[in-house]
Amino acid sequence: MDIRGLRYFTEVVRRQSFTRAAEALYVTQPTISKMVRQLEDELGMPLLIREGRSFRLTDAGRVAFERGQDVLAAMQRLNNELADLTALERGELVVGVPPMIGAIFFAPVVSAFHARYPKVELKLMEDGATAVENAVRSGQLEIGVAVLPVDETVFDHFGFVSDRLCLVAPSGSRWKGLASVALTDIADEPLILYPEDFTLSHRVADAYRRDGLTMKVAERSGHWDFIVALVAARLGVALLPERITRRIDRSLFDIVPLNDAELVWHLGLIWRRDTYLSHATRAWIDITREMLAPAEDDEHSHTGD
Image (cartoon, rainbow, N blue to C red; front, side, top):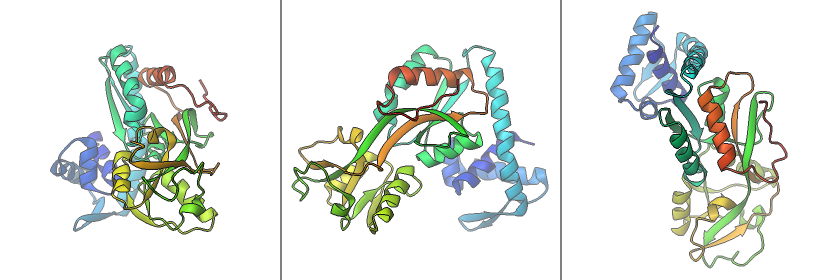
């Protein structure tokens, strides 16, 4: 079986789009389509039922997707162990990072990693924290950044930031000068929120439901600078982690801490407890520990080294 074709197929199914799979794999969409058809020819049965721009899995496709992930994870472990024989003189490391945090936290980590291991190709896979967690769980990724807490029976992790959320509103709002706000204070406001598959989006929605409130989402974006631009355009207000609000021009916005102990932006590196970690991944963990001080109140930080 062509492993590359299997990888392309699973990525198409995972992302529910040939276009998004092509973008993630840095290949053209015709290449993806060709490789999937070749895989179907090799297996002797269709895996996808194509319906215009969408598709659905056949019974064979569901089996190929489920078992294919196991095969790809096993191949990745084999490649990692073989690459270790060269003591980081070559190889590749893919780290899952939510797009909202890459520039804020990981630019110095990436720089330090390149300086120490220039022959290791480092790739950052940008995706929401939920998608990153699922990719690490399935073995597609060895390591990534997720919103904590995570299932400690599955993952080892260490936290590096724990931030409260803050209301971001256009300057001159009715919240200007307040020490804090509650969700009930902004319940009637249109909200500029993260994409629905972002963990923090789920947490905010859960908090609204907890308080018996109806969330009114005006727009969604996974990029904090665009969220801020939409707030500046007076399309709504936003709830952003305090660390991110430090990058915002406070002369243009009112920034007020949210008084909600349950809504905390708690980030950490995660990796599976029960799997082999390549030397490159261990090196990334070590450098991240050096460059990013653990969150001061990270009582749940846990590693199983």
